[in-house]
Image (cartoon, rainbow, N blue to C red; front, side, top):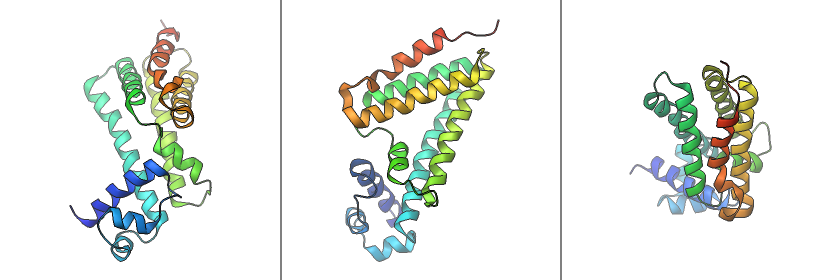
Length: 187
């Protein structure tokens, strides 16, 4: 595997397990079986490495929308159900660290950090995509429903981080399905 990919893989494992600020560049280089000079040749700074790490996670998350659109072509309600089912499964199976992007948002409060824009853009895009699907599926209050889905997911991700797998975050799939069933749709 090329050095850049080894660095990103090591970064992903270390940042998710321990947090961004807790991991040094030396540790990343060692875990990637390289040295700091090679790391800095591929990423000019740790901040830019963090941004690239988060960009790759956001891209993977965005790929889910494409997969749902293929699996449920011309069926926005099916896409919504597929999304909440997938999120429920992910929350029930993921580790206790919750969402890497949400964790990064907490760790990186500086608005000028190169990763902030990636986090904000991804989270905004996710919420907007939900609203678009809610509108297309004919819900009476699509923006409100999108906000409820989005906030339940965000809360579940933080809940996993704060209390672990014994908390209600692992049951978010059930809650989201109930929310979709109870939300009024236009006739």
